[in-house]
Length: 219
Image (cartoon, rainbow, N blue to C red; front, side):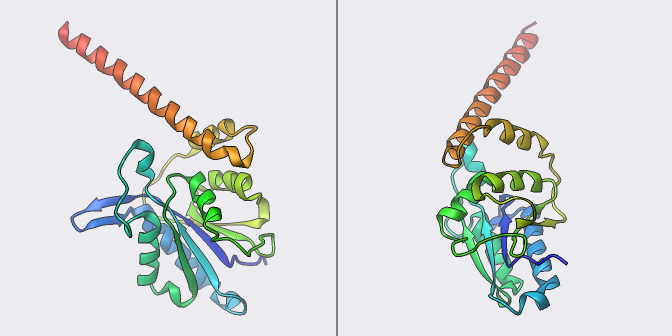
């Protein structure tokens, strides 16, 4: 039987504005539940060693489109950690939050920069748990390989269930092509370049669509 992960990295799935402020999306809440279920399922095995560490990572993904950030305490990592506290997960694990990131790549980069994985060496016997939806895991694994140098059994999939579905295959393909030949310290610059190109392409497409619509209406 493979060893359970003592460190879990929980990826954000966005926040939504409500009458009371900001809240997790259903997908984000599902990822918190997945972490709780995983810890509960392996509690007996994990109880014999160091405390479990759970890092909730996410800032505000809408920032890539120019949206202003939520106030302090209302970003993805903050809200996920708060939900974990409310569920009593802190009785069995130490909870941390990374709240600057705007993408899956930044989730990993900023978690490392903030020292939230410092002191840990991951391998098949002490894997790093990746908590996210099954459709997201292939891209997370690819990026974890580029940022952390971890592959295969050194990473443990912890799939979440519930929330909105998403087809991530295009994003995975773009990451594989866009990061081809890039060093680890070049990944973020590459990603921001790809985001800028994507925004420009959408503006061009929307502009052409608007022009065609205007032309048809004139006719």
